[in-house]
Image (cartoon, rainbow, N blue to C red; front, side, top):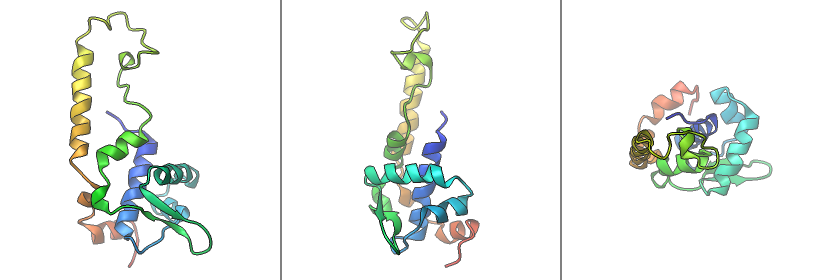
Amino acid sequence: MRLTVYTDYSLRMLLYLGIRGQNHLATIQEIADTYQISKNHLMKVTYDLGQHGLIETIRGRGGGIRLALPPEEINIGAVVRKTEEDFHLVECFNPENNLCKISSECQLKNVLYEALQAYLAVLDKYTLSDFLHSQESLLKLLGIEE
């Protein structure tokens, strides 16, 4: 299973906001600079995470973004489900584009589906708060001084 860059950036943004805490209003530029990633990509991530109710955006001078929920209420499996376009690991998972000749009898797709469900079940066990315990170390790695 491979996550898209979009999901990767979504998780990084949530981690950053979780590390910084509820009192800090971050900017998209700040997060882009910290991770050395595209501001344009993060703008779409920000919009979508806001639409999903995961982050809060405050407009205007002195505005920014922060988590809309406590980290313990942000489930990683749910975030991945919301940010991934699809989970078509193989062609036969997408009935609209399935041209595989053995699909009707293939047992491999059942195993792959089972593996996908197990993957998501593991992610469902964790919340954002599970990854914030080493907050000071993470701040240091990101080059952020409190």
